[in-house]
Length: 347
Ligand SMILES: [Zn+2]
Figure 1 (tube, rainbow, N blue to C red):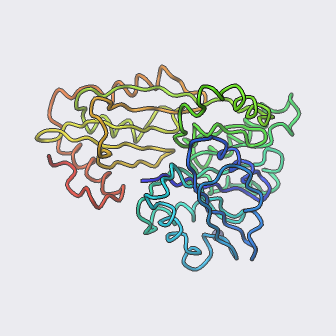
Figure 2: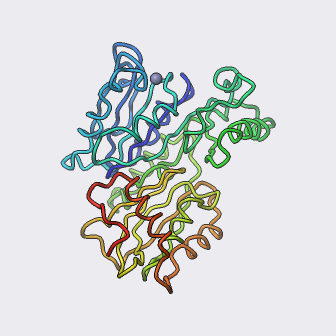
Figure 3: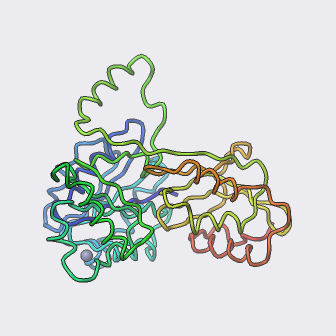
């Protein structure tokens, strides 16, 4: 199941810059769907990064168009195994509301995809004049997994911290747990958002490729950090769900394989959590149980707290799970839209 990452944000906040930033990792195969309100898709021409498959929805906002402008069909087209994509990014129009986009994805019919988070790009300079103008904090952030507060470089250095604090406080009025990352030139580390290819440069061309990338990197992004905890023996489903439902504050993404103890026996699951959306499915075929582990990813990750939380969640179960834990697990698997795993909770 391929993660679908949606970029939203008011016109001019930096969605296309962010998209191009996310497309800079060689070896990672990314498909994009661009939604342009105009008849002609001008935004497609602004993509400078490496795109492995591109589609567009023109003539209106994706969440307002009849039939979502064919979004489900395009997602399924890009999810075809022969394209071997690692992620699909949807750049929504400046008019799209994250709440509507979230609903489209959760109740859509496209197969082969899972939610990869909704990233809302905010213009640090214009936010209070464009998006956040009413007495109540905008509702759009309730559906957002990550807010990128962009154009920080346009704020005088002595005011940056206070501006970020004010914008963050307003956003947290509507979504206390949302991740917020400040950027300049939309320089967000792709590692935070999806799994990027590792070992990207063959050794002999490393210096040249790295130098060419560094030259383009006029505002180097702070790096996302990660911790890994192994899962050598079946863990308790309730303990894992506790982690997924209330992860440590600095964890943006959680992924990996875990063995869970069931009423009789055990079963392995593929775990993905981004923002507040949780996806549990049967272990990927061919994955090695000896490699079972969970990885937590975040900017400014509190590595100590994350490791402790993962240790607790993956501690070998000493007793069979309670019926309540099994029911929670079963519900999560069904909510994850896994037609092929109707029997979670049974051996
Ligand atoms: Zn719309």
